[in-house]
Image 1 (cartoon, chains in turn green, cyan):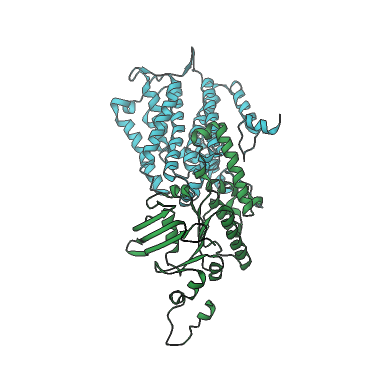
Image 2 (tube, rainbow over the protein chains, first blue to last red):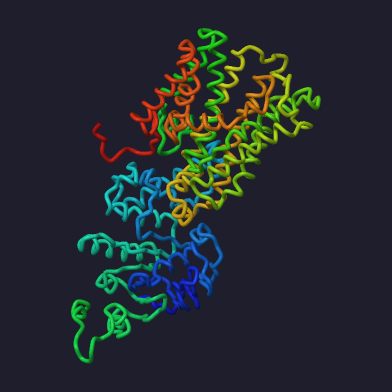
Length: 273
Length: 328
């Protein structure tokens, strides 16, 4: 197990964000150690996706700083942040539907390629070599997620589960150091979920990744994560090892509501155990 | 010759295949003029100018998904940059071959200027701003009398020449425009199958996702406007040289609409579609001339029928194999 404190890859410090007057995140502090798989959980509207959007540069936080590998990324545009080594998937799949699976992955590699208009039009040796390499790399990533048979199919025509895997493949194409997965198992059955979790653990080890994932399925998060952060109404209410978080009374309350009366067990509480 | 060397010779990258139909078509087109005679060469050359415009606008609208309704402005800028630099207006006589890239560059610069204010806009809003831009340029040409002679237009524009040979007959211009079309198609096709083209299409499909996958959206939007415009600039220079005189009314909104229509009819995003669309939209009204008063009616009917039966255009753009063949 990697020690989270040893070399923080991502440091979120005192970050607040509000939309108009509506506060989405308040004074969030969070730190990810190199190589961990971290779970981010919380009820709907807790600010999980907002945090992803802040880290990837879609929004600029109202306050606070976000450091990636020691460098401040607040104020940098999304494509710069991607080039630095942060990559993500989306809660509702956002593939480039009219492009083939292979092209989707190669677009994911955009920031590692250099050809501009001149190279594209003249097709000089450098551009052709670069294209050939990108092609090879993208094929390797596609077979990593088991989509090697699908490379020339349009992304929009793939079945749902394969689209989810293609999104991960596209995110991996930029050689990220930090991978943000927004509900990767949404809509999957238990077998698929289990396989995906194994896959995430696998690529973490093979590609030397740090993974931050948003997940609703409690069993999934607890099973895979080295550390879990719980958000509720934009605030961090708990953080730590999965076991500790599971027992945190604040977390139980956030998910299931306050105890009714004095000693009476909440009817839903048994399910959480 | 092994296939690898063959591909290298023709600079065919990965994910591309060699299509023998294209060179055969080119040879046929090159042999046409003696068969056709002057009148049809002239008509086809006119179609050719629209092919160049269509291929250019297809970059902005088809690849990058930026609906530009003021495209005629770049055509006008190309035409007037040659008209002003190679006519008795200022008694300048810059060579055509120099003005070809200069006209393209002027149009590209105008493309960037137009691109900047619409960077933050999406979809229909871009269409409205670009529509206004097209009108502004035409109105300027009409009113800057000192520069453009306004509605009186620029007359006696120099024809192109190579050494002592001067372009004069419609057949000469046919070959010039054919070369222009081929160059435009080659450049657009290579851009489409490159890092640049992929970034454009990704941006068209989902701008935010593209940005998060590392595409510099601002840069690629401006690039799409500039490169699309530069094709119109080239078209404009050729147009001015061929006509010998240009007037602001040559650059009305209808030109933008026609170019957009031919893209949609041919199949948006598809280069072969643009060529076919230009032949149909610009060529068929000529063919139907015999029907006199009914020709626009017949033409309109044809368009409606086509959009009913081929809503994605005659030759839809394709990037991959379908997962399953559609069964109809």
